[in-house]
Each structure stands twice: as structure tokens, then as C-alpha cells.
Image 1 (cartoon, rainbow, N blue to C red):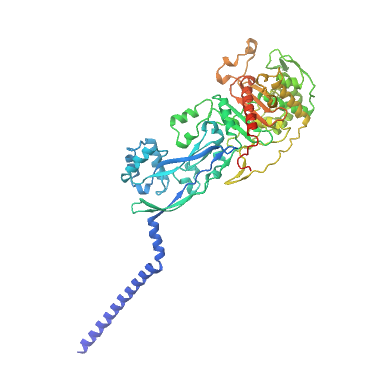
Image 2: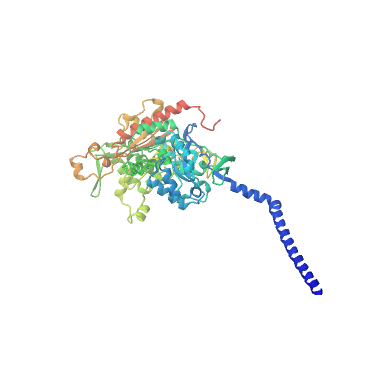
Length: 619
């Protein structure tokens, strides 16, 4: 009996312990359920929503680019693109094969897409094809159930209103390359474009804007059910250029298909009203995508359409440099305006002969006559008396031999030689014969068309250090503010010296014996002053001189002389300066001066017509 009682007690204790353990486990389970369902309910609701809701970054509209009167030069237009999301597609290669039965996809496109799939995160959409027409969009949408991961995206595409005419000013936008990724998620968006050339590149941050976002509800397969919320991005800043679009178009049309450059600037403010490098190219093609054939056509063209010749073309200035030599000589006191030099067609230095462009010579020349007739022998002698150091110093003050800081990429320095430069670059001392050659703007001297325009503007405005610019705003990073106006500093050139040279440049165009008389503007209030230049690109042998120098039209195109002209107008109250360089155009007076005349005349006509018309942003 006692044993049965002990056994009963033991069983009761064990049952109680087992029940207590079960109760403890149940209480832990209840507590955990309470914790998850009550205390942590908001957190898990959020996690569930995150599985149900996708957040998408939205690209901002790129800022417009307008001319000085607010006319559109670059804007945006609707663009349909097809993208693939690798994590939703599964077998990307198989999906692309199916898609290629609907819209043609080349092997190169497929390789590019697969390369990006490996490089980018699985949830990042990858652009398959852009600029789809509505029929292509409809075919893809109908077949969406059989194309996992394929999505039609509606975005914006850059549009250049007058692409060919403004290509070297605006540049273009293109897809972001791998080396350009900075961690900014905007740069990884499908179809996102950044500036690759021109002001699009220089002011890319200001034009880019800030991204928005979209919240969309998706099902278990990742299909979008509905959009829950949308916050548009902040558009990029509108950029106002100094360009007059009407003048820009006229200048491009006037130059035609020649390999040439023309730049027009305000002599007091430095504002660039027209900047044309010819031949141009279509910047829209870089946005939509160039074919291999189109790319080869641009890169193999001997006229270099992709090069902005205004800032990156480097040329000997030829006789357009003679006003610089005259100012340097006057400043040194090496000559007076009345000093005469006799020109019989050539001069000698040791065993070397230096020839004038006029074989029989010009006779006795003073400074006015030498500028008017562009006498080489006169400027050989003036350069010899002045010296390369004084010439180089004057040239630099007038804007030659260094970058001017124009807001375009790729600006070249040119070259203004000196004895110090030659010792460092060549390893030998400067020779007197090289000074003579520099006196007519040849030899080592190199200038850009932009520098020639600034040189002319600084002479025309009475000797002030005007600086060229392309925007009517001050732009730093993504910040755009009104530009403060400051009067250009004086260059320290005596006004009477400037007046002497300007009088000579007036005679070049308006005297019946001037080298550019045929290209004059007959309207008196628009009278133009300037200087012609013809630059040899080949060596003329002694034998050729004796038998007769070959004419440009008898030479291959690439061996013909460059034609140059610099000028300003009105001559008695200068407002605009122009420089024209026509590669292998022959004579400056015949090829370049008429272009300068027509462009300056149109500039003045438009200025009179637009007088009193407010520029963009003015009250």
C-alpha cells in the first residue's frame, strides 16, 4: 500500500513538472506571438509593404539651353525605350532571343546588354533599345507575358533644334560610360545622359537637375499593379547663352561646307554672338546612337567635323598679326608712324632672302601704307628693330599665346615664341631670321580663331582686356546666378598707338588700294575695318620662285594657303569684332574677307532690328 502511495506521488510530481514545462513553453509562445503581432506589428507591416512596394528613382528633365533672346537651342522630347530587369528576367539571354523576334537586335547589342548585366546590380534596369516608334511599343506590350523582365519605359530624349549649326557650341549628350560612374544613382538609370562636349559638358551639373521617385505596387511576380505615389524630380537649370541663334544660323549657312571657322564677339563685353566651326555634325545622332558607318564618316573626314576649330584649331596668323608688330614697335620707339622702309620685293639677312608677297615690291612704305598694302618687307624690318621679346609681350597682352578661358572644352593655347621658349623647347637660341618671319605672323607662331577675334576686339575697344564668354549667367557647379558686369582692365597701350593701327586697318578695307577693298561694306554707318592674312602651308622652293609660284587653284586642296581675315565694325565706333579662318581657302582678301563682311553686316542689321528688345531675363 505504502509503495503504491509513493508511486502515485512520483507520478503526480512528474505530471506537474511536465504540465509546468508545457505551460512555460506555451507562455513563451504566447508572449512571442504578442510581441510579433502587437509590439512589432508596425515593423512587419512595413516589411510586408516593402515586399509589395517598389521605389523607383525618376530622372529629372534636363535643363533647356536658350539663346540671348530666349529662343530654344536644346530641349527635351518624349522617348519610348525598352529595358530589361535581370532579376525579373531570369534567363536574360533567352529573353533577348524572344525579344529579337519582335524588334531586331544585333549581336553587338546583345553583347553590350549581357556585359552590362554582369557589371550592374540585378535590380538595375538596362536599356535594350531607345527611340521606339508606337508600332514597336505596341508589339512589345502585346507579348509582355512571354517576356519576363521586359518593361516599356517612357522618358525624355535630348533634342537639338538646329543641330548642325550649333553643334560645336552646344556639344551633345550621350550614355554614361563605366569610368564616368561616380556612385550617383542617377547615372545608373537606363537612358540617362550626360554632357560629353560643348556647353553640355561644361555645365552638365547645372543642366542635370535632381532626381524624383515613384512608389509602385507589385505582385509576387514583380509586375506593376498600380502607382501609389510620385514625386517629380527637380528640372535642371535653364542655361542662357550669349549666342544670337539667328546670326549663328546665318553664319553657318554663309560658310557652307568649307573647312572653316568664324567667331563674332562684342568688343566691350566679350559676349560671343556667333561661333561656327565647319563642317558641323548632327549632335542628335550621338543621343540616339551612331552607327559604325556614321562614326567612321566623322572620324575619317579630312575636314575634321568633330573638332571645334574656333578653340582647338591652331594656325599661323599670317598678316593678321601685323597690327601686333606695329603696336610693339611703336611702344618700343623702334619706328615712328612716318618711318619709311623701301620694298623692292625682298630683303636679305646673311645668305638668306626673305620675300614680299608682291614680287615687284611696294616701294617706300610708312606704317599706314604697310598695313594698307600688307607689305612684308616693311614688317621684316620693323620686327628686326623691335625684337621677338617685345613682340611676344604685346601679343600676349592682346590675347595670343595662352588660353582665354572660354566656357568650352578643348581650348588650345596656341604659341607665342620667345628666346626662353625656344631654349626650353628646342634647345637652341633664338635667331634673328626667326624674328623676321615672326614679323609677318609665320614661323613658330600659332593662334586660334578665338584668340584672333579677342586680339581684334582689344584693339577695336581702345586697348582693354575684354574676355570672351558664352553665357549670360554665372554658373558654378549646379548653381546659376546673374553675372556681375565689370569693365575690362586697360592693357597699358597708349591710345595714340591704337589710333594709328586702327586707321591703317580702316584703310585696308576702305581705301581703293587696300587689300580688302572689294570686300568693304558700302553702308557708311556700318563701315568695316580689318586686316587680311594669307598663310603658306608648304615651302616654296627657289626654283619655283624663279619659274613662277604655282597658283592655289593648281595645287591639291591640302597644299593651298589658309585664308584669314580679322575685322570690326562700325569702324568709327566699334561694337563687334570678327575673325574668319578658311583652311586652304587661298587668298585672305578673296576668300575670308567677303565672309567677314557678310557676317558683320548681318550682325549690325540684327542689332539695329533688335535694338530695345529685352534679352531673356531682363525687365
